[in-house]
Picture 1 (cartoon, rainbow over the protein chains, first blue to last red):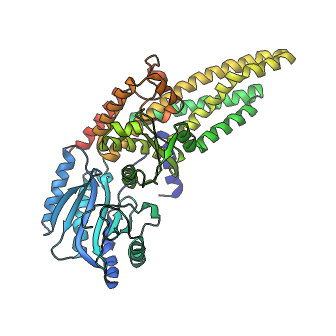
Picture 2: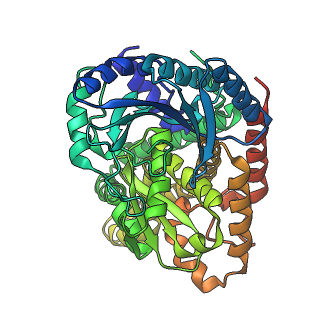
Length: 199
Length: 299
């Protein structure tokens, strides 16, 4: 579509008050294994844990989709854990016995596409892939579905309650993975995800 | 590409388009009448458009100041900020400024000329009355106002009505001085006066109905954003119930910017549905029930 067409559509949409919700970009996740290699070269280790964070919608259709996803991922041999956080979002956390990034990404992608196919792609917030820094700090590569971009999230050491981020390490990780994945350029969109599973 | 469950209401879109078209037609006719017919109004036009532009450009600052709202940082209101952070990430929109107004009137409003220059304000009254899920529904409704650019649309929609009202109010003095020098001037001015009054009246009714449609539309997208229309319904019921019980002296404070409030701040029974800035509660609840049914439809 041409830029002026998009602009014209946006104009009519705001005039008629029917802002269409943004669509989630699901396929960018497949670039993660490449970024994982770059991180491993710098001493970071994949933990074999990843998660999808989404908004649960009311009604039976959503619950049905959710149980389908669980069955689907269970066939790959990974274990699943569902955690509700205090903001009303649900984390579907996937653990692998042996860390394998491309397998993990496939699992997460299966969860995302199932939700999107059921018409709930608007409910997808983010996906996380767990790593451990060379010093042993847990960190996550976070994928923002609506932006189609990644950013690193590193809780500062020993600050379970204080909610401080290790910005230096986050920026260091950005430098490492910059060429493999699209890193979110607007730093204000680097959403803090306190209490995410695996961190 | 996977389909989305989000559906815009065709009827609502059509009605909104109809009202917009009617307003546009009215304004063009009025503009042509003022300029061609009487050669007057150029100055008034400039003044009123400048006023409307100022109102639009400074809408966030003005609205926050008139509600005595204070911007709060993430450290001061971590939960409110985190909630808005997540909704913005879901809706892929820049985060607005967050403000809190210390008043017992339970309400929330969004304002600002563009999503990048916007602010969302909640009152301490609403924070006390709603639980987290309900508050989130209200915030999603307000963020939808921002995404729909409602401040811009409503400013444009009401700007020439403002001019007509301006002429109706102040034209008498100008007309009086003109009539002293020129016999025809007086008669001509009477025509302008009457036409302005009619334009003002029609545009008033049309802008109000536009405002009601925008509310319904914000309810709808807000409900789809959180996936929990019934939480928004319960917030609406809670707040509307509370609004009726609060004394009038409090309600009058909010009248000027009532158009962007979550629930109508003016609750007098004498105000008929035609002049109301907000749709009746039952209509909003019915629409949310429809959204809820759409969400639970099997794949």
